[in-house]
Amino acid sequence: MFFIFEILPPILNFLGAIVLGAGFLISDKEALEQGVTKWAYDNDEDNKKLPAVKSLLRQRKLTIMGLIILLVGLALEITSIFIRV
Image 1: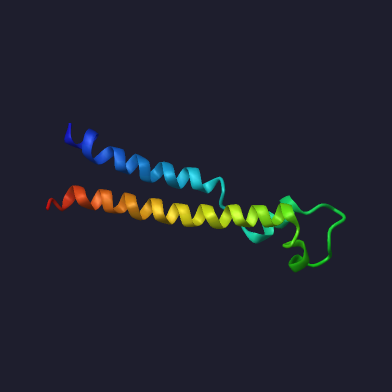
Image 2 (image 1 turned 60 degrees about the vertical axis):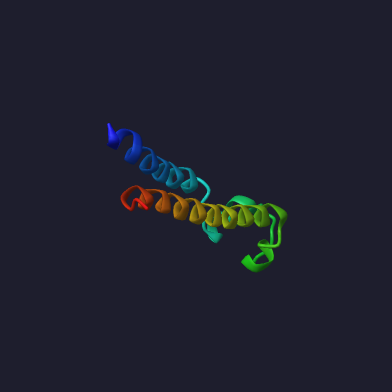
């Protein structure tokens, strides 16, 4: 019972955060492909200034930061299970 109520929830939260974040993690190239129309600029630097591409890149950056914070918090939660103060 200890495993189910004390160990399993943080592990599931950890895995859930990874799976949730995986849907938002895209590369610069993928953002350019999704956010640029056929009639856009020829070079990637100008295309990165387009609103749709900027939005995708901002979303990616915030997702990465959020995942890092979430994973650190969950790691501390898991650690606290094994280290009783």
